[in-house]
Image 1 (cartoon, each protein chain N blue to C red):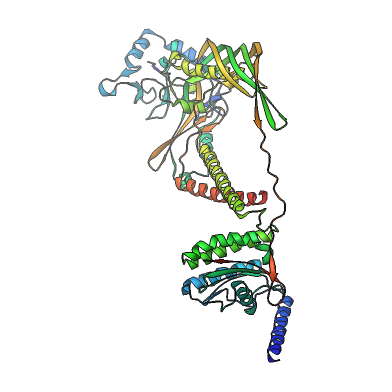
Image 2: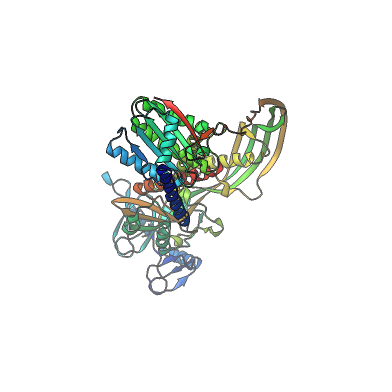
Amino acid sequence: MSGILEYKCPCCGGAIRFDSATQKMKCPYCDTEFDVDTLRQFDEERMEEDSDPSWQEDSVAQGGDELDGEQEGLVTYVCESCGGEIVAERNMAATSCPYCGNSVIVAKQLSGMLRPDLVIPFKLDKKAAEDRLREHLKGKILLPSLFKSENRIKEVRGVYAPFWLYDCDAQADIRCRATRLNSWRQGDYMYTETQHYLVARSGDIGFDKVPADGSLKLDDALMDSLEPYDYTDAVDFQTAYLAGYFADKYDQSAQDCAPRANDRIRMSTQNAFLDTIIGYATCVPEHMNIQIKQGKIRYALLPVWLLNTVYKGQIYTFAMNGQTGKFIGNLPADKGKAVAIAGGVFAAATLLAWLALGFLL
Amino acid sequence: MKGKKRVLRGAGLWALFFLCAACLGLRVSANDVKVADEADLLTYEEEEKLQERLAEIAEEYQSDVVVATVESCGGMDVQSFTDQYYYDNGYGYGQRRDGIILLISMRERRFHLATRGSAIRSFTDYGLEVLDDSITPYLSEGEYYKAFGTFADLAEDFLEEAEKGTPYDTNHSYSDHMYRSLVRLMCSLGIGLVAAVITLVVLFSRLRSVRVKYEARDYVRDGSFRVTRANDVFLYRTVSRTRIQQESSGGGRGGGSTTHSAPGGGSAGGRSGSF
């Protein structure tokens, strides 16, 4: 039976996880380290052993029973280690068993059409995420004073977020009305000459791996704000990377997400060409034609630390780029503080201006 | 003979007084009563307040600022009476008796503004006219306290400007100053407001780090940006002209102050009016 995968230590049999510090699989029990590749080969060997017809049936029977009725959209799995029943959302691809804590990976959510092309493994661990949260709260003058002390971390999860990466070629053809100004003085008059131009630019530009997250659960703005990821660290997908983390399969298709990527590409293309129009006082676009030729689309899992905290009964969500450590999350403002600061600055600036103007006049 | 003796003794006392003051590096007025309300036009509280204010101004600018009310001038004309009154009561700072007095006489319903010493320069003919224009309406309505309050405010403004070396005069009008003050106030408030708004925007934006991305600059493929056609076509030109505003040539000399000889020697400036 294997609707779900578990990575066991070949040494001691304990459940092993991906270790972001060493970029290797590490057994938390016996400290043995393995290359992800080694483990994959080891697993492949094991899979071959396992693949008999009865396994197929088992996986149909046990690998993801859909619950009916009000709990629609939920699926149950059986933990291979402890036999506990794991209830998960339909899109869940990796999680941990709520009873024994073993990492659980649902193979069928990550194979065939659903198999990611790329994965950027986690580089930073949970502790780094918690440290960065503290740093994130520093130097924020308007943050309520109690937020730092009373803001409790409720949950920290390392999530592999499903992303679509779009390669695109864009062709632009733009036309603008532009003016140059020239002024001089003659006698009692100031003359202003305006030269009108028609400026045209054509050309092309390419984009690689423009990301758009393919998960409805993850806020688009939150995911956008975590960019950029460094794709040079991206590797071919191996399920082993997911061991110890959470993952969902995409629930927005590449077509659903394409408009978001295309809008960004269109905007950048337009800006790139408008930036080549220099030496004019004004420039008003008159005609703009941008054709986007969709290239390769890749499915990637990118590392995200999600932190949920509670302050005064309200949940605040923070996210950290699991590769670069870029930390984001909106914070509440202390309105009283804002009013006091604004008042103080207003008074001080008015006074200073009053004195400075007294000197000038 | 007796009268002369008294004058001599008085002069001797004065000389002694000024000598002492000079030694101490102080210039003080011999008379601390800045509000002499003989005609009893003010309430006690009003008198107290005005006294305090005038004493403050006098102290700061080393120039007496006095308000006096009398029942009558006793047949003298109000200018001579005021000059004499000022002298007799020992008002004025320093040897030249610097100061200004506003005296109103109820029987004649006349008032006089007299200036002595440095105050003659501080309150030019133009300046006295401004004071006259500001005070007379209040006096006519019997709003004596308001009239004296206005007198105090204006006197302070005038003394302050004179201290800068540019007393208000025909070439440096008080209304210009008011206008400029208003502009200055508005600009200051405007700058204060802008500074406060900028501060808030900056501080609030530091709390917000979640933003939708609208462009994809980070993902441009290296070397893929190619401009295949760049065409800048000149179409036509337009020319407009505006008349340059000629700055009116300001400056020049002001009207200055006219003076007459005053009791006790020296000269005094002044202006009289009815209410």
